[in-house]
Length: 146
Image 1 (cartoon, rainbow, N blue to C red):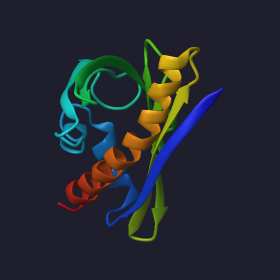
Image 2 (image 1 turned 90 degrees about the horizontal axis):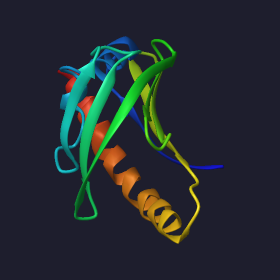
Image 3 (image 1 turned 60 degrees about the horizontal axis):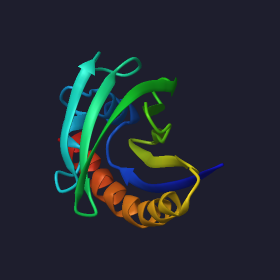
């Protein structure tokens, strides 16, 4: 069982440009993560799309959390997914062409782990992630336009 959290926005740039920005973990992706929450994003292996391994440090609820994720492309050119190697939490970026623009959704599937602490973490994450995603979508729009 999982809980899903997502946010969507229209990006005023072609889908191909948006997808390439997201899939480029060495340069593009580092420019779309909100610095208020993301302390670092380092590439351990690969760097573009499927097969990339990243190490990310996020600052949430007053604490830093570092995780490693593997990047896959379930639908190359349309869907790219980062899966936390420890927890299985998976965040997908879905890019859908819409004329000269793109519709972009960031969606995270949070596995249900047992216990009260896990339930409280899910509750907090469901409230925090949409705001982070809205900021990230604004950065995607700004970067893809430029």
